[in-house]
Image 1: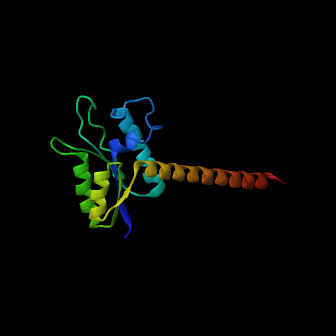
Image 2: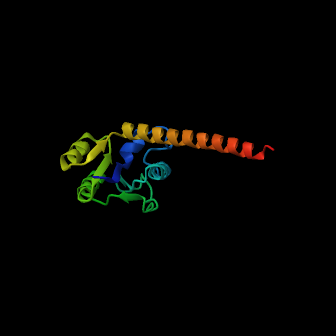
Image 3: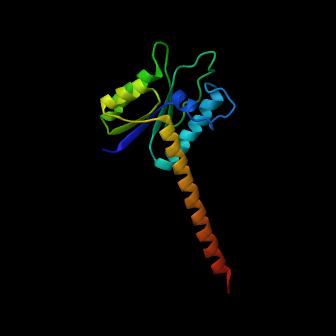
Length: 158
């Protein structure tokens, strides 16, 4: 079956990605926004839809951010519900349509999702994969630019 969605434990990933939102509190709106931007890049590189889950906003964490987009959905838990519960519920629903990948460092959450039949990835593993994807794209763009530069220079010669 094809991978239909990537489900991300937002704060878990933010805590394991030190380069992201460097120098800002991990639970801040700006850190969340930067994570959503990175996940949008991940979607652009892979074509996979992503849903990122955060535990609900509080006076400490600030207001709820924008809703994201169709490709990168941003969800916050409400009172009495955790992001983990939302991830489990979403995994159950999406597994009816194909494979689901859950990105989290919460071991209980990973065990639960694996028991449901979903795939799990550590946050460190996801960050490494993201970096490999972006490096591969950068190399491909450089190769393309070199080829085009040579082609352009050849066409200009008499």
